[in-house]
Image (tube, rainbow, N blue to C red; front, side, top):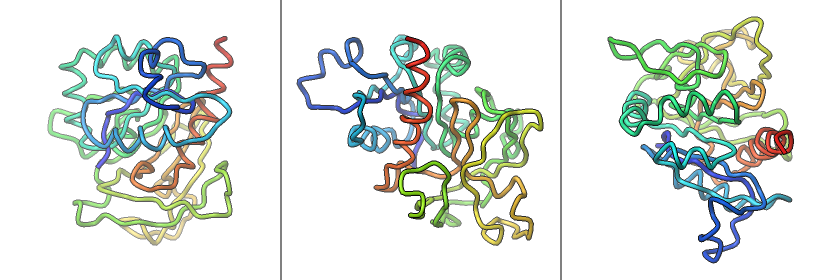
Length: 248
């Protein structure tokens, strides 16, 4: 399962000879994944295999110094409470919060929980969150890992949008609501009959499984666990590259 683990940069990784300049002289932006827990290697692999006009370099971030070198961030899935604790011990909580205010971040599953405004179903003393996306979320909406499933998704803005995207849901969170005044673009929904408690309203916020607010992206499923890299391409093209271009 994925987790808050990769800090990666966007562009094409052309081989080991680039290692000496991986963090400082790349022609493209650096996308960040925090290497704290989970399937960061899968995110890294998807990014490195993209073929885009700009170079992508991937970096595993374990410290504030690593984070400062990056232009974008992926917070993968895993166990959100553990991720927050490890980030706190690594001195990354406050730098992450500041990073989120300035640069693109994509949260998947547990990463989506950490990016939310509020989360229910957390431990007794609550869940430390990073914030940044104007949504309210419930942890483990489908219960245990035994309830994991895959469902085809129609996703707005992906390359080849007519081809369904394989959404892999593992102890996935459920979106409970959006802040009314927030500028949020819903880009994928789950069929209402697949929710933990099936409903009839296809526009209910609980059907939302992917959304974008500004240059932040949130998915309640695990795009890194499929060979389909279109979500990684989307984050690069729609969120990270434009942010880098605006800052230069």
